[in-house]
Figure 1 (tube, one colour):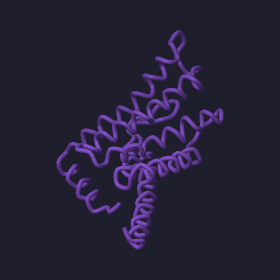
Figure 2 (figure 1 turned 180 degrees about the vertical axis):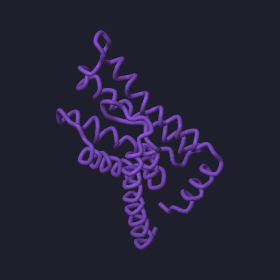
Figure 3 (figure 1 turned 120 degrees about the horizontal axis):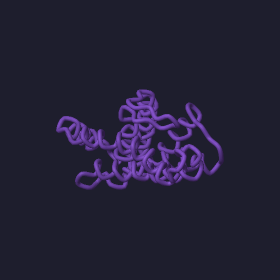
Figure 4 (figure 1 turned 120 degrees about the vertical axis):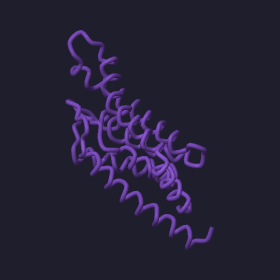
Length: 183
């Protein structure tokens, strides 16, 4: 690959990451089901974040996910401890870029999206029972509480997104866009 094509691809990915990070932040403000202690089922904000990995690869996806995590922390963050910041913002949002690991497989976007949000779920789940155990209702195991709380909003949005991604117009459009990207 020539230097000019490589520079063009890097610039294209940089611009795409910036646009998708901005879109994710905007979509995160459209809360379909707000949760009482953070996190919400949003209007496909995690999809916008995972598309960076799908279009540009895992390096770009993870990097833009981490950037998105820091922006979410600054814009609407709640933090108690440095490790909680890593779990809830750096690692959880960085996991969204894992979608890029599957971008060249059949059904790669569905698989990559599922893996990405599972990574986000695991990170948020760990943070939930380590740092937010006191939010569990009296008599409820904090691990179980964190599992239920985080699965409701992360996989709630995830299931809706996977359904939308299965619609032929959406699937075909994203496939055509990906084919136009040169890595």
